[in-house]
Image (tube, rainbow, N blue to C red; front, side, top):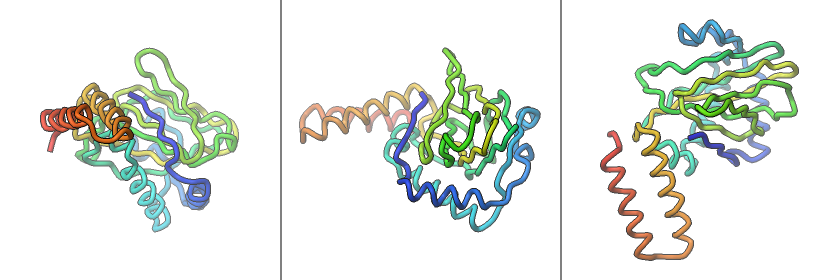
Length: 218
């Protein structure tokens, strides 16, 4: 399941985050790629600094606190985020994420876009979901959540620069199909709660809890 989550940040907050990101120091992003991805990765990655760490702490807290993310991902652990930059001519060829990163199993990947799409040309994230290759280029402050098992690439930037925060999630419910069932239950429960208490609402909440007991990993 791929999911767009919008409204992470208001316009003022995302503008402030982008200003911080634009002022960071960057190094060759291939240095942190896996052995296979390194051959096709040509981008920049922000180096450690108090400013970078504060930006990523803000993004991490906002993502982890978003109810739709919590419902869709059932996160157990999240990798340290990175700030990536693609300048003119830079790209990331077809690749799949390493299954393990610092002992964390990569079940889901996400990209939080920091640049306005009008500020650059190219740079779309292309995810192959088994049916087609989907090109994704969202507004500043929006996020795409998608399976780490997919092949993906970033198209070459032909003008301007693309800034984003990128991270990976280990889910408490490992199976993607089971996570989707729980996500659908969550949405149904939220819809029913608008009408007040009911026997159906209670049964659905019970079913969700019991499925979590069966499927969740401690």
